[in-house]
Length: 203
Image 1: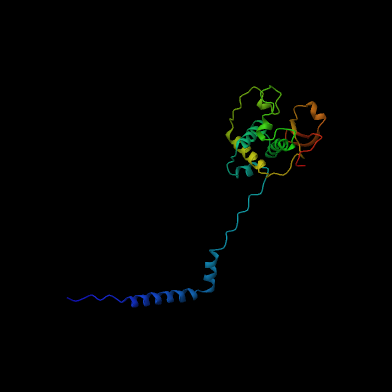
Image 2: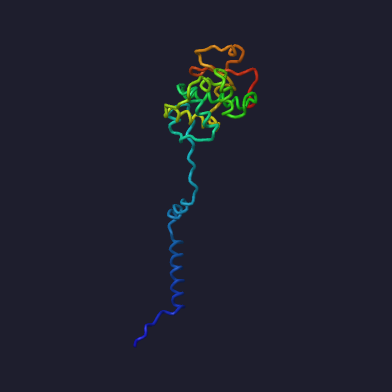
């Protein structure tokens, strides 16, 4: 019977070494441009710059769906019932007042605390919708989605100061007695903004 002869181990090793050498030479002979293209694969990708903030519905619509904790939800709800018919700038201004109250030390120390202050006593609350006897029902989903984004951006500090530290506001349809004592700081949309004789902690 004829025996089948296998290559010796030393022959196989020599073949492997020769192959490795040929590959090494081939890599070293890559043209310069191809090698630079190869190196580009390892360069860090350029970070995408965030969209410049704008007080517009277009800007809001390009923001991701907003979410957050209970305080975020309280602010989004307050903006819906207090300012959903206002311009985006006006909505940010109302949010700013609520945030200024949290910072002031003269009001509750949380967004929900500020918004619900006085709730339960008809017309003695700080924000009328919380004590007007009407059930809070969100019927305009698109409007709520937008004011939620305003709430998220305001909490995150995206917007600049619009009201000069205001802690109070009212619509131009009313003339509360306190408005004659407090300092008017801004008029945005249908709202007039005021600051007490004290300034907020951030000012």
